[in-house]
Length: 100
Image: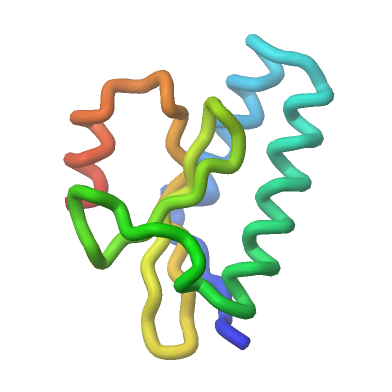
């Protein structure tokens, strides 16, 4: 089993995305986001290699949680580092600045 660790920006962007969903979507999408996050974290604990590498940095992997939100993470020795939860409607160049 891999240990899951969160970067401080991951915690911040998780909360920001919940706020975004509260303003623009329904409580159903918030529940889906939270449930999907827990499902993916459980999968990452068991096998973090199941999701694809990010095309701009092969040491980072990505998981689309919802159409609106993607989780980015990397794998270390027995550790999965969750970097951030990205709102897919934001400028992708900003994402590159954060993860490259």
